[in-house]
Image 1 (cartoon, rainbow, N blue to C red):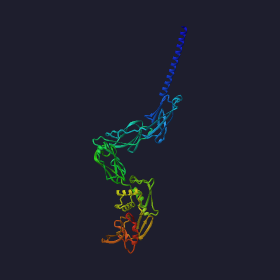
Image 2: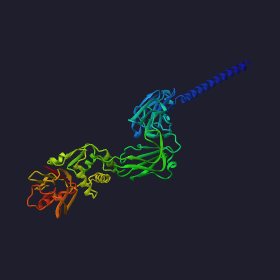
Image 3: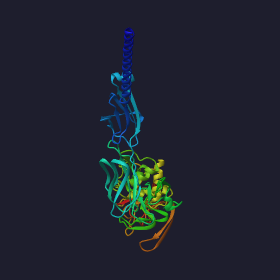
Image 4: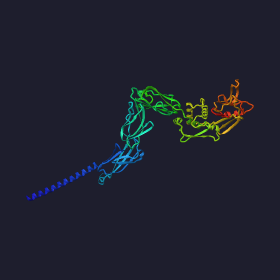
Length: 544
């Protein structure tokens, strides 16, 4: 019995040992599993966007250490980053909405790396935030500030204002900014950056209107201001365009090539085409239905269906430049920078805002009388004569005035690169006996001939005059100093330059002394030779 009992005790001991071993093994397994689970739970890496930085990388306690961070902008261009407390901030300014790709590599601890891999990589593609204006058309009471609100906090804003543009840094960021007290109606272009490391985005228009029962309209440029011929016209309404104008569109007077476009529900834009509005005109917009607009700079509203702007006339300087380029002046012109593009919009703009450059005499031996009459940027008889010649060549009414029709033709010729090939002529007559007439053309004297000017009481007037009528033969008539009438048919090679005074042939027994009634009489051969050189616009100087 004792043996049996001892055996039972031995077996019980072995059983207890086995149970202890199994328990220990189970505990070890539990520990290993727990460690593995902890490693998986506490070794993660998170890469996500951040409310202040571009992105944020978070590494859990068992995740390891950040080994490499790299960012790429549009086109795969490398973007430098600053890393602070896991926040990734660009060291180069981004544009709102710009897409960025970020790669982060984290090296795990040695023992965990053996189990899960030595390195963990995360990738994130995102866009720089874009702050949007929440209200583009506002009603603002008198003497109240204009406030612009955004859909998120912004760190920087820039906008146009009287005297130039304004840029404001807002520190921690604001969702609403004040532009201060403004006129009753107005429009401003405002741009914003949501983050300090961003550039300001694309400007957007914000308009405000006073309280009114009817629709209020604000125009840009402001009604009554001066605009260029190719300046677009923006009309912004406090109510939707469809509600204010229905299906109709405004009309322009005088008629101007171009088209209306509905930019958004509240705004119409007219974009001129071709050469745009006529130079020197009052451009009116006629609305199909009346709207309320502010009267001047005040807050009082007036109802009207017509607003207007002033299109300035073409500048004298640009007129000289174009006439020189086209060969109608004795000077050449060269721009100091790039030449004006041969496009309607560029030429129209240059007409009122001429480029800088320099004029030079085309010929070294230009008569001093002609040079003395030339002044850059100022009207002169030289310019008037060139305009008259241009009008005559292009079959326009000859008056020497650069009106809308002349400018239109000058600009179209400039676009086409047209140039006169007839050269430049100038005639000067000496009244000192022996009287002479000299024709100068394109740098050389063509002929100097004896001439007769007016007798006492009918002297040929001193001064410089452009030829205004050019006839191969005509009948000349008038009144003699004694009151009698004369009528001389068959007068050849006639170029009228001052009232009834003309260069022409007249049969005399001699030439070189005062004999006419104010005209410049020439021998037949001389008058026939100079006539082809003295078309309308040619300058004739009478001097002592």
